[in-house]
Image 1: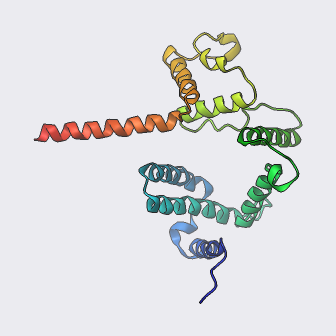
Image 2 (image 1 turned 120 degrees about the vertical axis):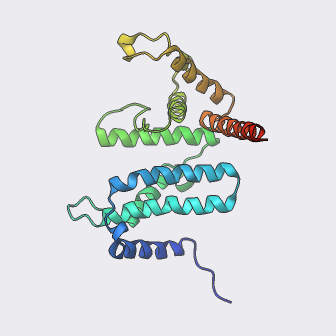
Image 3 (image 1 turned 120 degrees about the horizontal axis):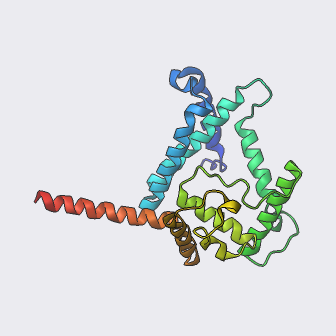
Length: 231
């Protein structure tokens, strides 16, 4: 009876495969961080679609594609000789250190009352890290990626603000805000959409996933209608 491989052992094979592809495959060899960027986004969305489908095998496969993108970017970075390079080990080391640092209730002697306090501690530790890097307190909204889908962006902004104690009614002030204070104000529809995100979150729902569910239902209705027209 052979001894079972330790968790993560197959990742070493993936590193070796990626390194060889980078050396010997013409397509892989010419890729850059910039050329790979669309694939990182695309594979993430495909993994989300697999998750929503409820197919565990499809999700496993798509997670592999996401992992490939991480490996690929790290391999590209490892080839730099200007002092800015890093390896997949550096990537893993960085996230492991971050997880240990931001979970003092697991890896140190901090006691928490539940998940809510874990989030509060996480935000406090993150803010301290940000201040140490930039020399200032910054904002709770620092680091929110504005390139993400708008509904997801609105939800993340509201989550961050809520955890910082920002009054929830601010989420409904978009249509009446003073342009001198906020820049270009949203349209009435934009403000209503932002407020609808707050309403969804108050109901314990993810607005992005809810809209995706509604979109899939609409797709099915259109396909049924098309079949009826062909009958």
